[in-house]
Length: 364
Image (cartoon, rainbow, N blue to C red; front, side, top):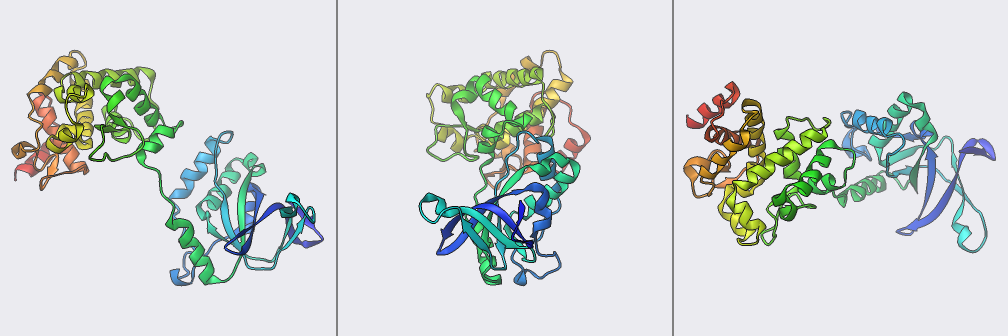
Protein backbone atom coordinates (compact mmCIF):
# COMPACT_ATOMS: atom_id res chain seq x y z
CA UNK A 1 0.00 0.00 0.00
CA UNK A 2 1.13 3.53 -0.70
CA UNK A 3 -0.22 7.03 -0.37
CA UNK A 4 -1.47 8.64 -3.59
CA UNK A 5 -2.19 12.27 -4.46
CA UNK A 6 -2.68 13.17 -0.79
CA UNK A 7 -2.20 11.80 2.64
CA UNK A 8 -5.95 11.36 2.90
CA UNK A 9 -6.30 8.34 0.64
CA UNK A 10 -5.09 4.77 0.46
CA UNK A 11 -4.11 3.34 -2.89
CA UNK A 12 -4.09 -0.32 -3.85
CA UNK A 13 -3.16 -2.04 -7.09
CA UNK A 14 -6.49 -3.59 -8.05
CA UNK A 15 -8.56 -5.35 -10.68
CA UNK A 16 -11.93 -3.84 -11.60
CA UNK A 17 -14.99 -5.90 -12.38
CA UNK A 18 -18.77 -5.77 -12.45
CA UNK A 19 -21.33 -7.77 -10.48
CA UNK A 20 -25.08 -7.21 -10.94
CA UNK A 21 -24.34 -3.97 -12.76
CA UNK A 22 -22.28 -2.60 -9.86
CA UNK A 23 -18.52 -2.01 -10.00
CA UNK A 24 -16.35 -4.07 -7.69
CA UNK A 25 -12.62 -4.23 -7.13
CA UNK A 26 -10.28 -6.91 -5.87
CA UNK A 27 -6.98 -6.03 -4.27
CA UNK A 28 -4.30 -7.62 -2.11
CA UNK A 29 -4.10 -6.08 1.33
CA UNK A 30 -1.10 -6.54 3.65
CA UNK A 31 -2.25 -8.35 6.77
CA UNK A 32 -0.68 -5.79 9.08
CA UNK A 33 -3.14 -3.21 7.74
CA UNK A 34 -6.27 -5.35 8.00
CA UNK A 35 -7.19 -4.34 11.61
CA UNK A 36 -6.74 -0.66 10.77
CA UNK A 37 -8.70 -0.61 7.53
CA UNK A 38 -11.68 -2.80 8.29
CA UNK A 39 -14.33 -2.33 10.94
CA UNK A 40 -17.28 -4.45 11.98
CA UNK A 41 -20.46 -3.60 13.87
CA UNK A 42 -20.25 -3.58 17.62
CA UNK A 43 -21.89 -6.45 19.47
CA UNK A 44 -24.34 -4.22 21.27
CA UNK A 45 -25.90 -2.89 18.05
CA UNK A 46 -29.31 -4.55 17.49
CA UNK A 47 -29.24 -7.11 14.65
CA UNK A 48 -31.94 -5.30 12.66
CA UNK A 49 -29.63 -2.30 12.15
CA UNK A 50 -26.44 -4.33 11.74
CA UNK A 51 -24.95 -5.65 8.50
CA UNK A 52 -23.13 -8.57 10.12
CA UNK A 53 -23.55 -11.23 12.75
CA UNK A 54 -21.82 -10.72 16.09
CA UNK A 55 -18.33 -12.07 16.54
CA UNK A 56 -18.10 -15.56 17.96
CA UNK A 57 -14.98 -14.97 20.04
CA UNK A 58 -14.45 -18.70 20.58
CA UNK A 59 -13.54 -19.05 16.90
CA UNK A 60 -10.77 -16.44 16.93
CA UNK A 61 -8.02 -18.36 18.81
CA UNK A 62 -8.48 -21.41 16.59
CA UNK A 63 -8.11 -19.44 13.35
CA UNK A 64 -5.22 -17.38 14.72
CA UNK A 65 -3.43 -20.49 15.93
CA UNK A 66 -3.92 -22.04 12.48
CA UNK A 67 -2.20 -19.04 10.87
CA UNK A 68 0.69 -18.97 13.34
CA UNK A 69 1.40 -22.71 13.40
CA UNK A 70 1.13 -22.96 9.60
CA UNK A 71 2.78 -19.67 8.72
CA UNK A 72 4.54 -21.18 5.71
CA UNK A 73 1.62 -23.31 4.57
CA UNK A 74 -1.80 -21.77 5.25
CA UNK A 75 -4.69 -20.79 2.99
CA UNK A 76 -6.98 -17.86 3.71
CA UNK A 77 -9.96 -16.91 1.54
CA UNK A 78 -10.86 -13.35 0.58
CA UNK A 79 -12.59 -10.77 2.74
CA UNK A 80 -15.63 -9.04 1.24
CA UNK A 81 -16.16 -5.42 2.26
CA UNK A 82 -18.26 -2.36 1.44
CA UNK A 83 -16.90 1.19 1.16
CA UNK A 84 -19.25 4.02 2.20
CA UNK A 85 -17.46 6.65 0.12
CA UNK A 86 -16.63 7.58 -3.46
CA UNK A 87 -13.53 5.81 -4.72
CA UNK A 88 -11.29 6.60 -7.65
CA UNK A 89 -9.99 3.95 -10.04
CA UNK A 90 -7.17 4.90 -12.41
CA UNK A 91 -6.78 2.24 -15.14
CA UNK A 92 -3.36 1.26 -16.37
CA UNK A 93 -4.48 1.77 -19.99
CA UNK A 94 -7.35 3.35 -21.90
CA UNK A 95 -8.07 0.30 -24.04
CA UNK A 96 -7.45 -3.43 -24.06
CA UNK A 97 -7.29 -5.86 -21.18
CA UNK A 98 -5.33 -3.42 -19.00
CA UNK A 99 -8.35 -1.10 -18.82
CA UNK A 100 -9.52 -3.07 -15.78
CA UNK A 101 -6.09 -3.14 -14.12
CA UNK A 102 -5.04 -0.08 -12.17
CA UNK A 103 -4.90 1.79 -8.90
CA UNK A 104 -7.86 2.00 -6.51
CA UNK A 105 -7.86 5.05 -4.23
CA UNK A 106 -10.01 4.95 -1.09
CA UNK A 107 -10.43 8.01 1.14
CA UNK A 108 -8.82 7.48 4.52
CA UNK A 109 -11.92 8.70 6.30
CA UNK A 110 -14.11 6.14 4.52
CA UNK A 111 -15.67 3.40 6.58
CA UNK A 112 -14.86 0.00 5.16
CA UNK A 113 -17.39 -2.45 6.55
CA UNK A 114 -16.82 -6.19 6.36
CA UNK A 115 -19.68 -8.13 4.78
CA UNK A 116 -17.97 -11.50 4.98
CA UNK A 117 -14.80 -12.38 6.89
CA UNK A 118 -15.05 -10.64 10.26
CA UNK A 119 -13.66 -13.71 12.06
CA UNK A 120 -10.72 -13.80 9.64
CA UNK A 121 -10.09 -10.12 10.33
CA UNK A 122 -10.07 -10.61 14.11
CA UNK A 123 -7.88 -13.70 13.82
CA UNK A 124 -5.41 -11.88 11.57
CA UNK A 125 -5.11 -9.08 14.13
CA UNK A 126 -4.38 -11.62 16.85
CA UNK A 127 -1.99 -13.70 14.72
CA UNK A 128 0.06 -10.69 13.59
CA UNK A 129 0.54 -9.63 17.21
CA UNK A 130 1.81 -13.10 18.03
CA UNK A 131 3.93 -13.56 14.90
CA UNK A 132 4.76 -10.24 13.27
CA UNK A 133 6.16 -11.80 10.09
CA UNK A 134 2.60 -12.64 9.06
CA UNK A 135 2.00 -8.91 8.72
CA UNK A 136 3.99 -8.91 5.47
CA UNK A 137 1.66 -11.49 3.91
CA UNK A 138 -1.43 -10.41 2.02
CA UNK A 139 -5.09 -11.35 1.90
CA UNK A 140 -7.35 -10.72 -1.10
CA UNK A 141 -10.16 -8.23 -0.52
CA UNK A 142 -13.25 -7.84 -2.69
CA UNK A 143 -14.49 -4.24 -2.41
CA UNK A 144 -18.02 -3.08 -3.20
CA UNK A 145 -19.40 0.43 -2.99
CA UNK A 146 -21.81 0.67 -0.04
CA UNK A 147 -25.42 1.24 -1.14
CA UNK A 148 -26.77 1.45 2.39
CA UNK A 149 -27.72 -0.85 5.25
CA UNK A 150 -30.34 -2.83 3.33
CA UNK A 151 -27.91 -3.64 0.54
CA UNK A 152 -25.17 -4.62 3.05
CA UNK A 153 -27.55 -6.89 4.93
CA UNK A 154 -28.65 -8.50 1.67
CA UNK A 155 -25.00 -9.03 0.68
CA UNK A 156 -24.38 -10.82 3.96
CA UNK A 157 -27.42 -13.04 3.42
CA UNK A 158 -26.44 -13.81 -0.17
CA UNK A 159 -22.82 -14.57 0.70
CA UNK A 160 -23.82 -17.04 3.41
CA UNK A 161 -27.00 -18.49 1.90
CA UNK A 162 -25.16 -20.71 -0.54
CA UNK A 163 -22.12 -21.48 1.59
CA UNK A 164 -22.04 -25.25 2.09
CA UNK A 165 -19.69 -26.73 4.64
CA UNK A 166 -17.93 -29.82 3.27
CA UNK A 167 -18.97 -33.13 4.78
CA UNK A 168 -16.89 -34.55 7.61
CA UNK A 169 -15.81 -37.39 5.33
CA UNK A 170 -14.61 -35.05 2.57
CA UNK A 171 -12.77 -32.88 5.11
CA UNK A 172 -11.16 -36.04 6.49
CA UNK A 173 -10.13 -37.12 3.01
CA UNK A 174 -8.44 -33.81 2.18
CA UNK A 175 -7.07 -32.65 5.54
CA UNK A 176 -3.33 -33.29 5.48
CA UNK A 177 -2.64 -31.70 8.87
CA UNK A 178 -5.11 -33.52 11.11
CA UNK A 179 -3.60 -36.69 12.67
CA UNK A 180 -7.03 -38.32 13.04
CA UNK A 181 -7.75 -37.79 9.35
CA UNK A 182 -4.40 -39.32 8.44
CA UNK A 183 -5.31 -42.30 10.63
CA UNK A 184 -8.65 -42.75 8.86
CA UNK A 185 -7.04 -42.67 5.41
CA UNK A 186 -4.38 -45.13 6.57
CA UNK A 187 -7.04 -47.53 7.82
CA UNK A 188 -8.94 -47.44 4.54
CA UNK A 189 -5.72 -48.48 2.82
CA UNK A 190 -4.78 -51.14 5.35
CA UNK A 191 -8.04 -52.72 6.53
CA UNK A 192 -9.37 -55.08 3.90
CA UNK A 193 -13.09 -54.50 4.52
CA UNK A 194 -12.65 -50.75 4.62
CA UNK A 195 -10.95 -50.62 1.21
CA UNK A 196 -14.01 -51.45 -0.85
CA UNK A 197 -16.78 -50.54 1.55
CA UNK A 198 -15.96 -46.96 2.63
CA UNK A 199 -17.78 -43.85 1.42
CA UNK A 200 -14.95 -41.32 1.10
CA UNK A 201 -16.84 -38.09 0.36
CA UNK A 202 -20.20 -38.16 2.15
CA UNK A 203 -20.95 -38.57 5.83
CA UNK A 204 -24.15 -40.47 5.14
CA UNK A 205 -24.81 -43.43 2.88
CA UNK A 206 -27.62 -43.49 0.35
CA UNK A 207 -29.91 -46.48 0.02
CA UNK A 208 -28.42 -47.45 -3.34
CA UNK A 209 -24.81 -47.15 -2.24
CA UNK A 210 -22.52 -50.17 -2.30
CA UNK A 211 -20.68 -48.77 0.73
CA UNK A 212 -21.05 -49.81 4.35
CA UNK A 213 -18.90 -47.30 6.28
CA UNK A 214 -18.10 -43.60 6.01
CA UNK A 215 -14.60 -42.19 6.31
CA UNK A 216 -15.77 -39.85 9.08
CA UNK A 217 -17.22 -42.74 11.13
CA UNK A 218 -13.96 -44.67 10.78
CA UNK A 219 -12.08 -41.62 12.05
CA UNK A 220 -14.36 -41.17 15.05
CA UNK A 221 -14.39 -44.88 15.97
CA UNK A 222 -10.62 -45.22 15.64
CA UNK A 223 -9.94 -42.10 17.68
CA UNK A 224 -12.04 -43.66 20.44
CA UNK A 225 -10.16 -46.94 20.05
CA UNK A 226 -6.82 -45.21 20.63
CA UNK A 227 -8.28 -42.76 23.18
CA UNK A 228 -7.09 -39.76 21.22
CA UNK A 229 -8.37 -36.20 21.27
CA UNK A 230 -9.14 -34.31 18.04
CA UNK A 231 -5.63 -32.87 17.72
CA UNK A 232 -3.55 -35.56 19.45
CA UNK A 233 -0.62 -36.99 17.54
CA UNK A 234 -0.83 -40.65 16.50
CA UNK A 235 2.31 -42.74 16.12
CA UNK A 236 2.97 -45.27 13.37
CA UNK A 237 2.76 -48.09 15.89
CA UNK A 238 -0.65 -46.85 17.06
CA UNK A 239 -1.87 -46.68 13.48
CA UNK A 240 -0.66 -50.22 12.89
CA UNK A 241 -2.42 -51.36 16.08
CA UNK A 242 -5.67 -49.79 14.92
CA UNK A 243 -5.40 -51.51 11.55
CA UNK A 244 -4.74 -54.84 13.26
CA UNK A 245 -7.74 -54.32 15.53
CA UNK A 246 -10.18 -53.54 12.71
CA UNK A 247 -8.89 -56.37 10.54
CA UNK A 248 -9.43 -58.71 13.47
CA UNK A 249 -12.93 -57.36 14.12
CA UNK A 250 -13.79 -57.79 10.44
CA UNK A 251 -12.64 -61.41 10.51
CA UNK A 252 -15.42 -62.12 13.02
CA UNK A 253 -18.07 -60.13 11.14
CA UNK A 254 -19.29 -62.58 8.53
CA UNK A 255 -21.74 -60.07 7.05
CA UNK A 256 -18.96 -57.56 6.46
CA UNK A 257 -16.99 -60.25 4.65
CA UNK A 258 -20.00 -61.16 2.52
CA UNK A 259 -20.52 -57.50 1.62
CA UNK A 260 -16.87 -57.18 0.68
CA UNK A 261 -17.22 -60.17 -1.65
CA UNK A 262 -20.43 -58.66 -3.08
CA UNK A 263 -22.35 -61.72 -1.96
CA UNK A 264 -24.90 -59.67 -0.04
CA UNK A 265 -26.51 -56.28 -0.56
CA UNK A 266 -25.09 -53.53 1.63
CA UNK A 267 -28.50 -51.86 1.53
CA UNK A 268 -29.99 -55.02 3.00
CA UNK A 269 -27.39 -55.07 5.75
CA UNK A 270 -28.02 -51.45 6.67
CA UNK A 271 -31.75 -52.04 6.70
CA UNK A 272 -31.69 -55.19 8.84
CA UNK A 273 -28.61 -55.02 11.08
CA UNK A 274 -27.10 -52.56 13.54
CA UNK A 275 -23.51 -53.61 12.85
CA UNK A 276 -23.58 -51.75 9.53
CA UNK A 277 -23.97 -48.26 11.00
CA UNK A 278 -21.76 -45.60 12.53
CA UNK A 279 -23.21 -46.02 16.04
CA UNK A 280 -21.96 -49.62 16.22
CA UNK A 281 -18.61 -48.87 14.59
CA UNK A 282 -18.07 -46.13 17.18
CA UNK A 283 -19.18 -48.48 19.96
CA UNK A 284 -16.74 -51.14 18.76
CA UNK A 285 -13.97 -48.56 18.97
CA UNK A 286 -14.99 -47.57 22.52
CA UNK A 287 -15.19 -51.19 23.67
CA UNK A 288 -11.95 -51.97 21.85
CA UNK A 289 -10.10 -49.34 23.88
CA UNK A 290 -11.08 -51.17 27.08
CA UNK A 291 -10.25 -54.54 25.53
CA UNK A 292 -6.71 -53.41 24.70
CA UNK A 293 -6.28 -52.08 28.25
CA UNK A 294 -7.72 -55.05 30.12
CA UNK A 295 -6.31 -57.79 27.88
CA UNK A 296 -3.13 -56.43 26.27
CA UNK A 297 -2.14 -60.01 25.45
CA UNK A 298 -4.65 -62.23 23.72
CA UNK A 299 -7.23 -59.55 22.95
CA UNK A 300 -7.55 -60.95 19.43
CA UNK A 301 -9.02 -64.21 20.73
CA UNK A 302 -11.63 -62.40 22.80
CA UNK A 303 -12.91 -60.63 19.69
CA UNK A 304 -14.09 -64.02 18.43
CA UNK A 305 -17.00 -63.58 20.87
CA UNK A 306 -18.40 -60.97 18.46
CA UNK A 307 -19.66 -63.92 16.44
CA UNK A 308 -22.09 -64.75 19.25
CA UNK A 309 -23.90 -61.41 19.00
CA UNK A 310 -27.24 -61.19 17.22
CA UNK A 311 -26.82 -57.91 15.35
CA UNK A 312 -30.28 -57.90 13.75
CA UNK A 313 -32.38 -54.78 14.31
CA UNK A 314 -35.39 -57.00 14.99
CA UNK A 315 -33.66 -58.09 18.21
CA UNK A 316 -35.13 -55.13 20.08
CA UNK A 317 -34.63 -56.80 23.45
CA UNK A 318 -30.94 -56.06 23.07
CA UNK A 319 -30.76 -53.01 20.81
CA UNK A 320 -33.76 -50.87 21.78
CA UNK A 321 -32.42 -48.16 24.06
CA UNK A 322 -28.86 -48.92 22.94
CA UNK A 323 -28.25 -48.59 19.20
CA UNK A 324 -31.96 -47.98 18.60
CA UNK A 325 -34.27 -45.28 19.90
CA UNK A 326 -37.91 -46.03 19.12
CA UNK A 327 -36.76 -48.36 16.37
CA UNK A 328 -34.42 -45.87 14.70
CA UNK A 329 -30.62 -45.86 14.77
CA UNK A 330 -29.20 -43.18 17.05
CA UNK A 331 -25.63 -41.88 17.11
CA UNK A 332 -26.20 -39.89 20.30
CA UNK A 333 -23.42 -40.22 22.85
CA UNK A 334 -25.56 -42.15 25.34
CA UNK A 335 -26.62 -44.68 22.72
CA UNK A 336 -23.04 -45.18 21.57
CA UNK A 337 -22.02 -45.75 25.20
CA UNK A 338 -24.84 -48.25 25.84
CA UNK A 339 -24.07 -50.13 22.63
CA UNK A 340 -20.42 -50.25 23.66
CA UNK A 341 -21.49 -51.54 27.09
CA UNK A 342 -23.26 -54.50 25.55
CA UNK A 343 -20.18 -55.32 23.47
CA UNK A 344 -18.00 -54.99 26.58
CA UNK A 345 -20.21 -57.42 28.48
CA UNK A 346 -20.10 -59.96 25.64
CA UNK A 347 -16.31 -59.69 25.54
CA UNK A 348 -16.11 -60.20 29.30
CA UNK A 349 -14.83 -56.72 30.09
CA UNK A 350 -15.31 -54.87 33.36
CA UNK A 351 -17.54 -51.79 33.20
CA UNK A 352 -16.47 -48.50 34.68
CA UNK A 353 -18.64 -46.87 37.34
CA UNK A 354 -20.02 -44.45 34.75
CA UNK A 355 -20.83 -47.28 32.35
CA UNK A 356 -22.46 -49.28 35.14
CA UNK A 357 -24.60 -46.26 36.04
CA UNK A 358 -25.79 -46.05 32.43
CA UNK A 359 -26.78 -49.71 32.54
CA UNK A 360 -28.79 -49.16 35.69
CA UNK A 361 -30.62 -46.25 34.09
CA UNK A 362 -31.44 -48.42 31.08
CA UNK A 363 -33.06 -51.10 33.19
CA UNK A 364 -35.10 -48.72 35.34
